[in-house]
Length: 79
Image (tube, rainbow, N blue to C red; front, top):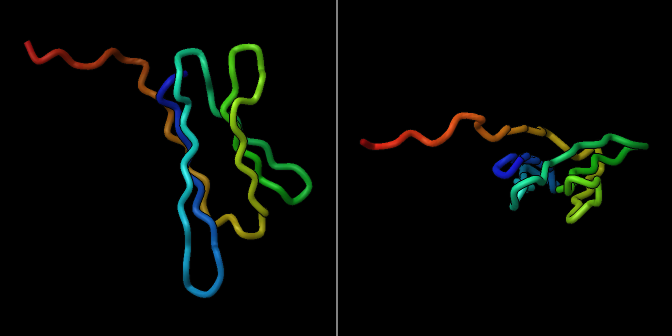
């Protein structure tokens, strides 16, 4: 769903960390997470299952993986 996003916090060595974000940019797309063979893969996927963009990280370096689902409620109207 448009608006879904995932934040990935990665240890880049020393005391430094780096934060990445993968977001579903269009209607009908979603963000999927897979953990396979020591790799964390975060992909933006279309309705048919085709990956549009993919980010891969070594699972030993991933400190946090935070999912932010899009809100199902329509935006509040000011009137």
